Length: 132
Ligand code: FE
Image 1 (cartoon, rainbow, N blue to C red):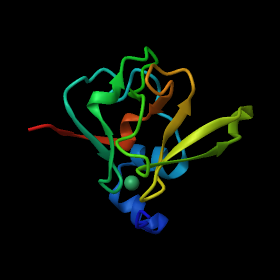
Image 2 (spheres, rainbow, N blue to C red):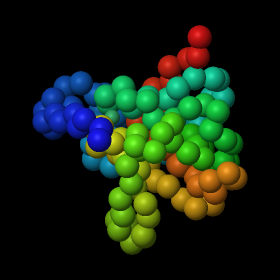
Image 3 (cartoon, rainbow, N blue to C red):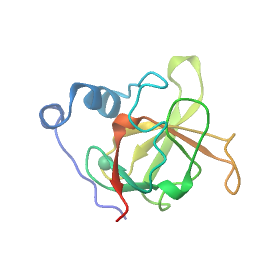
Image 4 (cartoon, helix red, strand yellow):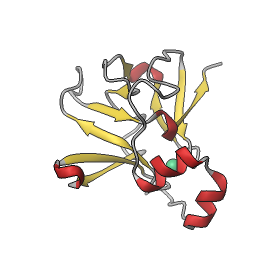
């Protein structure tokens, strides 16, 4: 199992930018087409902006047209956790960093092959580590 990283709200607030804190710890959503990565197609590994855990490979990133960075699968099965989200009068699947429980975004079933999934992420939850 993944070792959990636990920090207090005060610790997260001190370490993260206000935008990162709002999205990752308060389950916020950045406005479409405003984040750093929706239109960035450079190669690398997207890690959690909170704890640095590897989450997505750029090889699985696709242009969803939504204005959020979108992937058809996580870098491995255990890196991204999911849970039901009934907020905002919708039933959605929330995606979280399995290590630090940061809110990442949501998963939808209208993605491309081979998985048919669309991991719709917030740029502010991710950090791109370029491939060398
Ligand atoms: Fe994390």
